Length: 162
Image 1 (cartoon, rainbow, N blue to C red):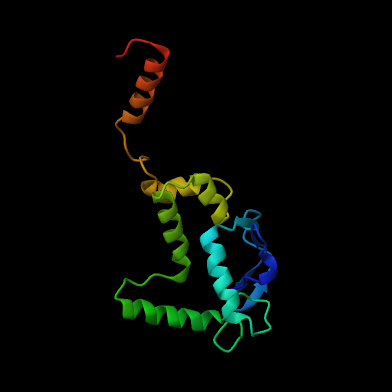
Image 2 (cartoon, rainbow, N blue to C red; image 1 turned 30 degrees about the vertical axis):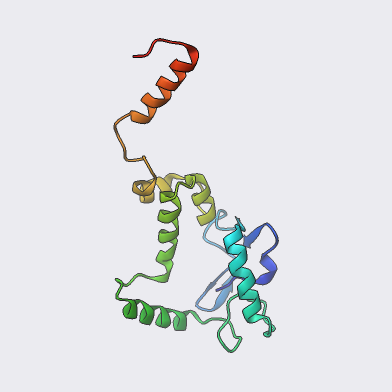
């Protein structure tokens, strides 16, 4: 909700503030919260559509209400709750969409380092601790990947196979 057009350029989105209870805060949780998120093609497409939707309003904010005013958190939370109820899904806080992003990204094979940077974490420790089960092959404990690599290497070097 605090995203402003001035923080978006051709390469990314600079995260340097947040909005809590409709007040802007520049003192973020930690130094890693202040970050640049790479602007991927799908995200660029969404932002271009959003710019078209709000072009008639003179606002620095990317996301606005239908009348062109900044979104109020409490009202968004109410709408979110109604949408969750109507969908029949188990209620989740809006904040938990971060967890959905992380688990989907890791499940798709994104590097844990990239996910950690995107979420504003200092390192991957929290990613592995919280989302490790979504990282492909992280929970496999059979050694088959190592064995395949070893066999390929031995074959290339002309070594005897096991």
